[in-house]
Image (cartoon, rainbow, N blue to C red; front, side, top):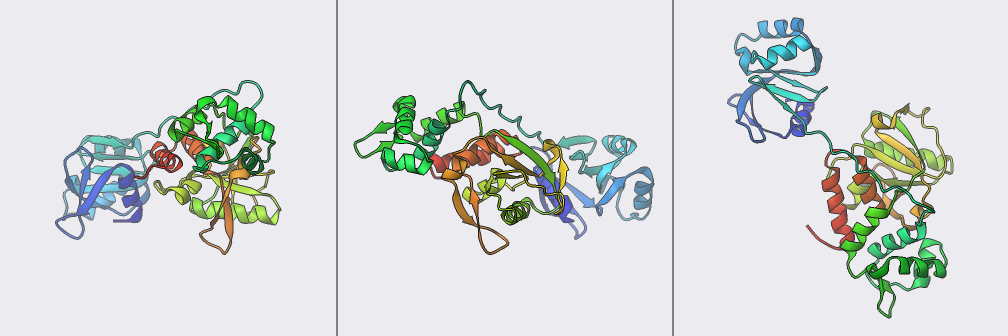
Length: 330
């Protein structure tokens, strides 16, 4: 079986096992009955001419056991597959047709709408909540102020605004219930905001994120990695599909293998955030394909970006980050 077929079947939640011969496989859809199939090599487009030529050379296998694999297929081919003539697996749209029944991937969850911003952004209060989640031991107000680049007066006002979500135990400020604080912060944080730019390139997104960091360094632009790629560093769970890189000013990637695209089509997004506290709580990590380090957004920002992305498995990945933030272990 080709790597492409394996990836498509995995996305459809179809279990794959060895068949009765080297040329066949046992496929078991979730909640369905297992069946044996002979998967033909991947082609770009499946039409009647291609099917006729493939079937004429497969006298050893009945058409009903053959699974055609293609990036796309004509309408007539889809109709023949749904009539039960043969099985079909396509990439666009992603679907498996077996014995006339259609199995499609579950749609990704709708992105969670951020709360509307009312009045002046409370960047210091929201950053204090994140800092309290990152620091489990009591921390004095001057230390919070230094970490966040703020004044002690602003920290004091922010702590009062958080009410009983934060207490001073005599040694410093601490969050008695991190889970409740995280939920409160998520409910009122409007996001980093700012401008976003969509890009598309062919390499794996982890490599693309690192490439953006390298290019930005040459331009003396600061970067901060968030979203899927940062989550894969902090609490691995899902395969990164989009690279989100915060930058301090716009950078043009079009001369380095990137194509500008709409945000919904992008696998790389660069963003100039409004939230001035993002770099204050960033952490440094080793990069994958070069000597050096990159800055990651703090886990709370990564958690927020995952939830708002609406990508496949984003809620499960965000739940793992939430466990990290509130001190749980899976």
